[in-house]
Length: 164
Image (cartoon, rainbow, N blue to C red; front, side):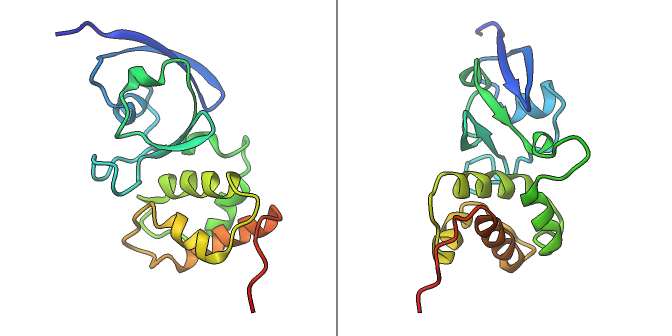
């Protein structure tokens, strides 16, 4: 058995160090070791997207990475989106557009949406629909999610004009 290894990362703007077993998943490290339980674990196979977080500026499934691989990384989880007592604009749109019900997929959905919109200059609604299919939601039917992400892209001037 390999000994635990101390890793240091910046999570939600705070530098944190802790030991992790070499085979400990990043999702488990975030939830169990760091106590940030907003990252949800669904399928543990990278399929559902519930565990999606932002690692070094890109969306990543935290159930598919080992914690030791994140040594030195900058990570944002759902706990790091809001600025003090104000929701992130995308969180606010999720609320306004009724884009959540049970909330289990919401942290991963928000991370996927931030990455999707942030990594494109322009997006069509079809590209948003395809991009958001990366996270499974069993409650909402995606209509509210689509409205929220489309409105967010529009707010940032990244929504491509509708063809017609």
